[in-house]
Image (tube, rainbow, N blue to C red; front, side, top):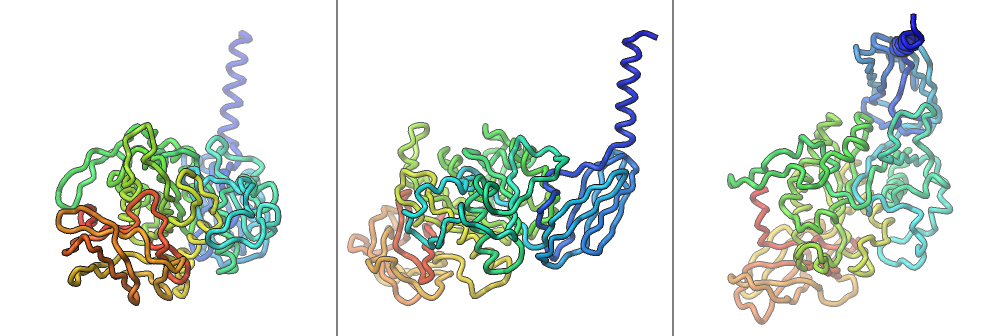
Length: 484
C-alpha cells in the first residue's frame, strides 16, 4: 500500500470518526452570563452526532431529545419566572457543557445602522449635551449593574465559540463598544421593571435596510390598495440578505421579547419613501415569522433632522426627509409597532449622528413600558395627528398622545406649521394651542384646505406635550395613507 493511499485512508478515518463522535456544539448566542426570556418557552439548540440523545437541565427542568439525521437538535424549556439567581445550565450528550451565571428576565434585539451601532465609547463630549433627559453620571465609567447583560453581534465572529463567552455584564471594557441606544434602553427599562435585562446588538454603520432582509423575501411587487403595482423591490443594489445571513440568522430562534430598529439614513439618501415603507414592512413581518411569533413588538426610531438636500450624489430636497418620516410611520398600521420621534435631539442638521443616545434609548423604553409591559400611566409619545376640520378661515387639528396637555417648549408660538388652499401652495401658519387641539391660520389663505407640520428636513419644532415629547411631523394630504 502506497504512502499516498495510507494518508488518504487515515484522513478518511479521522473524518468518519469525527462525524460519528461529534461533540455538542452551541451557537454563539448561547453562553455564560446570558439572560433567558421570562414567561415564554425558551429555545435551546445546537448540533451533535446524528441520532445522539441530548439533555438540557436548568432551573429544575430536565428535558431531552434526539438529534436528527443532520445532527441538529432543539429543546424548548417551559416558561420561566424572572430571576436574579445566577444559575447553571447543563447540556449533555457524548460530552457535557456547563453554562454559568444565567439570569432570567427580558431580552431585546436592537438592530440598524450607525446610529444604533453608535458605541458608548463615543461620549467624549458627554457633559456638554443638554437636550432631553440627561443621565446623572457617565455610565461608560461608572456603570455597575451586573443584572444588565449585553451580547455584541459582530458579523465576522458569529461562529460557535467553544468558550461560550459572547455575553457579559454591561460595564467596564464590555460596555465600551456596545450600542449606546441599546444600553440606555436597558438601563431605563430595568428601573421600570426590576428584572434582569438582556440586550443583543446587531448593527452595521452605513447599512441600508436590504442587507437585513432575507434575499428571497424582497423579490416581489408591492400592490397598493387601489390595485396599482409598485416597482419590484428586489435587491435595489443594496446587497440584500448580507447581514441577515451573517448576523440575524445565527440568532434565530433565541427567545426574545421584541425588536428595536434605528435605521434609514442610507435609504433616505437615495430619496426613497413608499418603497422603504414596504421594505420595512417586509423586514418586520419576516423577522416575526423567523421567530414564529407574529406578535413580537417592533419599535423603531424616526431618524433625526439632517440636511439631505445638500447631498451631491442625488438630487434631494428639503422635503425628502419628511416624506421618509411619513414612510416610516406608515408601518404603525402593523400591530405591535411604535415610533420614537427625535426631531428635537440634534444640535445641528449637519450632524448625521446626534449625540443624545441616552434620550433615544429612554424614549424607546417608554414605549416598551407602555405597550409591551402594560404600564399605561407611562406617556410614551408626543402628539400625533388624528384629524382636522375647517372652521371658517382656520383649521382645527386634533391629536392623540397629548399626555398631560399640549404646550410650547419655549413658551413662544408653535413653529413649523403651514397651510394651503385648494391650489396646494403652502404658506407658514400661525398656530395656537386650544385645549388638546391646535388652531392654525394665515391671512394669506382665506379658505384653508390642508395642513402640514414639521414638513422640512430642518424642522425642530417647539410643539410638545407636557411630558417633553415632541409632536410627530405630518401632512394631512398624505397620498399614501389609504393605499399602504
